[in-house]
Length: 504
Image (cartoon, rainbow, N blue to C red; front, side, top):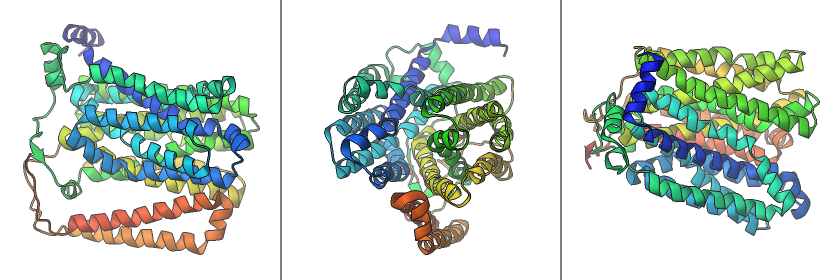
């Protein structure tokens, strides 16, 4: 289909689905404004409340643990409750928790509100990806995902609003104001979002367009979460999130210190450069989503289109290694911008791959599990970055790791799936009464890895604390415990189960 024909088709069927995408974009933007408010006001809060770095570390630890642990739980809830109710409840809770930052004054108070902020914000991506699967045909899902996912970058870019509010009024007012924004969004969400089949303002033509290339629905089935892990299609997604999400965490949390410590930029210059870098990431998110959809419209199979786009993104990621070693500051910033753009292009497609291979009924659970593995990987990356600075005085090790994770993940996708993204048939119930040896064996190995990591961190506890403070070391040991827990979960999922797929 030519671009002109595609535009004509879109105009003839309607564009209401893009209203839904806009709502998801604003929800994601609000999500990132709320979570970043603490970091941009860190200096102010330390001065007013007398926080030490250790205090601040424990506050951020609370959010990190909750945000990593709860997506798999909230994803399951989203599949049960539906997108509209789940995302509304989550956004109300995280808006209240964001506002509550302005009402507490102790370290313990901030720890509590940050923890519940992480719990609530963990619902955003599972709910948004599920909403995209509901509202967009397969050939447009990656673009829609790229568009709403660009809110992560916009949320970082516009964080200066929080600083302005704190400077003009007070930091308490700043937190309360950004919390109130979410409640405004809720009004539009409640009035605009329904399942496509029930929407009073959706034309019949647009509904048929949305459903044209969607596989047969399997919405009447209930699936034990243990059975999800028996489908081989889920594993490239989970592993991919585990090893590539930490790259984004690194850029998000460590770029300011890199620009200031190793490139000699002052905080104002660093902030300006970060705005440029995240603008590039926004463009990458949208372009990556557009490209795979464009290839599908040109007749490419879905798996080939997604992996072709992911290949381009992965092939450019080693540019982050060049960014570190080049003497040219402009070239360094250019390659970092390219890397963040390519990561976001990758994210648009890896998220969409979950809905390519799993029906809407379980997409929240699948994306939630992926977010949890990604969060655990990010927790390890935090310690790795701190240790790298502690041991070597620079971040070159982490830049090298950041450049290699996406090519490794792409290789896993190719070896595992051979480029074929075939949606699982949940109606073809698996025999859960038999044990699943690969899950049991791999789970046992992962338990041993988690235990080994815990032992390694414990044996070098003083080194870890010196590099990343006590809270950073606690983050790492918690992540290692999470790895062991994942292993135990796999063992349990591999044991004979009495429950099977049944009608809802």
